Length: 147
Image (cartoon, rainbow, N blue to C red):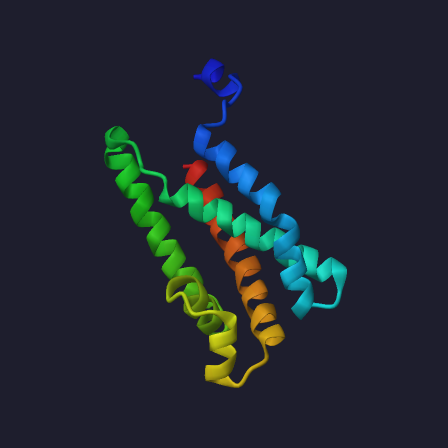
């Protein structure tokens, strides 16, 4: 088992394509964010979070091996329960923006029109939600690994 963990990881073709897309679109995405966020460091931080979410979403959509068995099924159930619990722990304003944007596919522009809240405020709320969820779900993952 130890030998398998020390072997270098060879990126798949899909990973290489994702990396190429990120490199190609990074500048354009940062320019778009800078139209809404004046602070360069904050815009860069938002871009990094968006790219991190992209990679996570990509990895979550990858098929789980058919021989994952009961442990993989248990892990999926634990993960779904943790996600549901973590979402419930968010302040309502952050949860509403996160769910609308990530689960319902509502754009920030449309959400701003619906709610009367500025896009910058919505971006900030989502950013705080993502930070909280990342920390909260990492803790659940770490706990799972120590079992």
